[in-house]
Image (cartoon, rainbow, N blue to C red):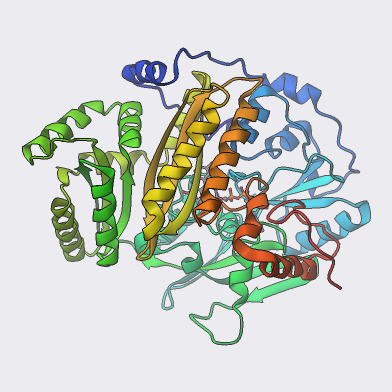
Length: 535
Ligand SMILES: Cc1cc2nc3c(=O)[nH]c(=O)nc-3n(C[C@H](O)[C@H](O)[C@H](O)COP(=O)(O)OP(=O)(O)OC[C@H]3O[C@@H](n4cnc5c(N)ncnc54)[C@H](O)[C@@H]3O)c2cc1C
């Protein structure tokens, strides 16, 4: 059973190593474990649904509560405190496109709105009902998750959009194939959700982002179906697939997705290298990616993240080993920034990629510690989100945000965003621990991923989060970054979208939504606040 107010399967825990407790207290000060609202009390406090019976729609309180919120920090505060706010009036479980059309008809009759729901892992408020809203029906696509077709010759696989990561990979594995799309939310997120949010997996360097996988499919809009044939490429005007990517449930419900798949890799290995400074690490990874080394993953943590990750995972002894290693190499300054890199593919290509990556790392002062840390990372990568549950239970909240900028601005933007968060926290005397890594690297730039830890305080933490998140978002915009590289827009990033798209760009997005959904049946308030009526 999934946790109703946290991450993942209730049977999986992530206990903290003993030193991690001490480190958290030293870093943030004394911690106070919060009192979470119990499920039965929260259920008892929910209003009755206003919807009449419908064969496709469940209206029981538990189904509605479990679909009320995603995984953003405000979602966690709402669920853990029991102050949930608006919950859907019903949850629909369609089994096919006819059911989607029936739901559009019902929503029109009842003046209701529909929120497409994949795995509910949105970290930007993407599936949360608006506070003041007509009746809300959340459309959970879990029953539209079949493996529909496999064209082995063309390496194209078609699935129902509600399929989750592990089921999709298991289906492909039976054909010796993989999609290779591994967001950290892999365990719960869905193919349709990945397309609707322009998701990026941890090995995007090798396999590509969801845009690269998405070959075609079907989207059922309130005005009818949009069919996207899986052309390998086409010069026939604007690519409609690009309009569906990132549409965040506003233009239609994606019902089927055809993806480009790869053969299972012959070999894969992950390695760790420590750099004495962040600057040296940044130069090294830029050189690696610009040399187009066939790596599958690069993740460079700054010194604070290296310390936090190794301590929370119980590997802090490795920091000392790396320190000794760097001293042997004559690097005395020793901030210790960890780079994890992966190579995937034919064994000889993996060997060459490893050799070339290590040559570049050494040139920039890097010390290779072998495969131990990389292997641990790969084994535990989908378990890491469970740490959020444990930290919260100890009184520590964790939030993440991300952007992407060209290489020329990477260091400046990373500093500015972290400083903005620290200053916003300082202004309200809130201890915060901020750290960063670079991942999802491109020849022209890199994604900057920021994590910050602060106290769970039932009364003030949401206001504190708004300050920190707002300050970070403004710093991103000021430094010319995209408001999101992978988490999407939802409600949390919507105020910053115009800075990136400009007035004409916003009008074009509004027109696409208006054309597909003139009656505003779908996911109001997400992506863009106000959709102009065009017709
Ligand atoms: C712990 C954690 C780690 C994460 N790691 C990553 C990561 O590594 N990379 C990354 O890219 N993201 C990551 N995310 C963010 C999130 O998982 C992604 O945005 C993911 O793509 C959402 O998929 P989902 O199926 O859960 O969609 P949901 O959260 O259910 O929905 C997200 C949005 O897509 C719309 N939508 C969903 N399905 C459909 C559909 N079939 N048709 C139309 N619209 C639809 C919804 O209406 C909503 O607007 C992470 C989130 C968490 C909580």
